[in-house]
Image (tube, rainbow, N blue to C red; front, side, top):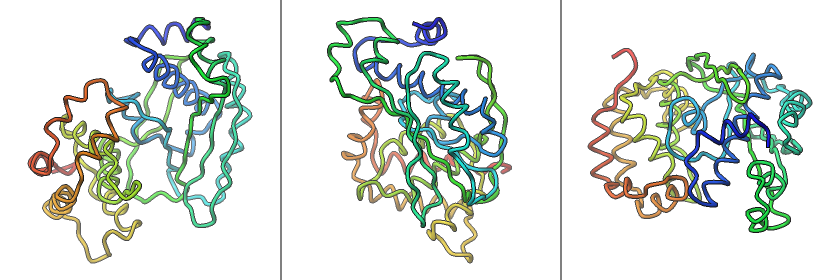
Length: 290
């Protein structure tokens, strides 16, 4: 095992096979993030989403994907141009992976790619436990998905963050108010198999627990881009609260809980979830600068 990987694993409380796989995936995510930084990716792009919240702000749930946004729109952005350096960096930690870009849809603003490797091979690399590896199917694949929005809505604000492991590196990322704006947009607009994504609700609670403020201008730009509102809508604080309260009244909370339970350690925190709970805590929502 790499000494760096061993050092990163020491930060995890691992109690079972599920924890082992999640720890492996999260460390691989951070190695990918470091590789993208070394490749110069953050000269044009910014990190956001649930994994950004986990790595830099301590969100206590597993997040599957790496989400990025260009700082300014560029429909000719070449994601694949970063792959050679990224692959070299990732393999320097002993990870045997391949990186492929997904064929893009003409109508999509999202570029997607997958980093894939053999799960059994990587479990052996991380834990050097042949009995553990035997419990993994021979053809099982560990997959890290990363996506980038090449047509981002305006008014996001950014900050620079640093990590020491796997090796010191820097990222550009959305600041907390802009991250929160993206999450509120997701709660209002994201359709996930015709139901709410419980992970969005979990993150929404996290932001409010942290007393995070929302970037109102960026939120409005996101809602406009999604055609959730029209140009005449001002998106006052009272108006956003009303939109959210209406949304919370429509949610199937049983399904929402089922979505998020595999990604958290203690499902008891979901016991209070209800329309009344979310509507009441939304009273604490505030805009940055207010």
